Image (cartoon, rainbow, N blue to C red; front, side, top):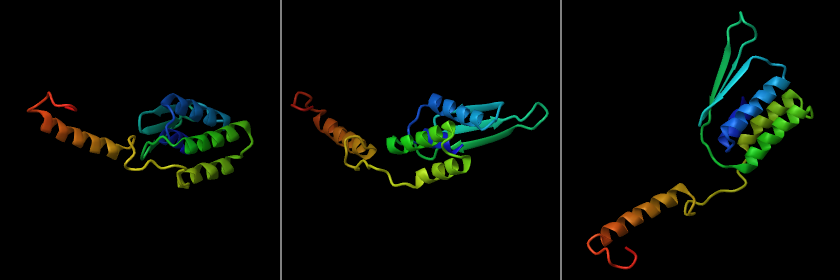
Length: 141
């Protein structure tokens, strides 16, 4: 579950999250597992047998960011577990420690790719448009 949430939160595609979670559950010996991934949620359902009650867990991705260092760390943990290099307890410990790490990079608020910069640009272009509206022939309008 942590692997799925971590992959989704840090920028993995829904199909990649689904495939990885299914590989992890299959290598753990679980069959009859269903995984659904939406933009911000991972749902895993497990049916032990036909007469059992299904077990379902849902995890919501708190905040989606493109953090490729954390994404690579979650992929390393899943590959380590799938290859047998990491036992289950160690994989769980490592997966739960990844979100606690400091990001390797931060986008400054004034960067052209940050959301706050888009708000500043939008508000300044609105002001420019309102200033230019009576005279659209002026340069820059």
